[in-house]
Image 1 (cartoon, rainbow, N blue to C red):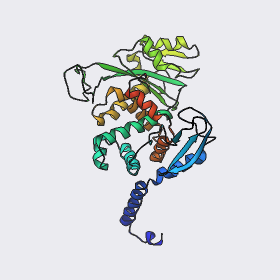
Image 2: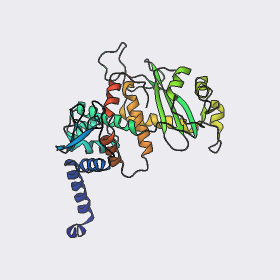
Image 3: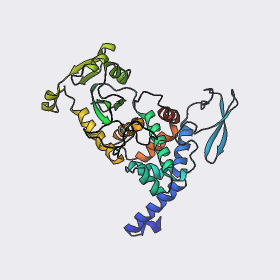
Image 4: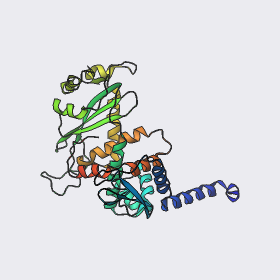
Length: 334
């Protein structure tokens, strides 16, 4: 420490960088956070096979907790179901998270870390599936809701029944279909909801499914004049629904209560967020929308990498969610 204090500024910065690289290379932060989660755990860890709480800890193997279930007699790792389950190159995991935070594409991150594109793809979606568990179940207060369209994308699909075209093209002349992204934003700052609907124009049934059990009682829901959203207040009488037409919305001032300028601004932010990825497959669009909402929630957090690592270590249903997306078994909703 005495030698460090006497170093010139540039040498200090280089030393900090080298120490940080070594810390990441030895899984330092992962090990530290894993220990914190272990110590903060209340009660026993549930068995992922039979859901029993009668489990015992049987030490660690390569830094990962090992458990045995007394009921079904099966062994399992503490990381089972999380994004870190069976990850072989944990020495590069933290660096990969840092590159994600900097907006690196899958290919660019793979090249930077010397891993395969397939590994980079798998890591990204495991991480993003973990994020899903941290988003709010419901939002309330004054909630603005509207939808916007994106081009349907089959990027990465082996066989599709149409002529090929440039990836990521979201222009009005795009020949493929469209999907709608229903977005609900709370002005209170307690999160947002994004739902992908496989249709250019949503129906009452789809609007109801998208917002079902996602809005708190006593919520003031503000939408445009799309009648599809009427179903929300019809199903839940505790929700007040107000509408505004597009012309009036553009002339409203920020202090006016009835407008949807906040959600429209969020649509613009989502489009800007998706641009660097040069076309996201519709199948994986929910994961990227999760990421957008998560980043908004973490915008003022100075320890974003630490928080994301905690999420990856603790989200026990990440792989289940990811498998459902792979198999198209879920409503395309975040």
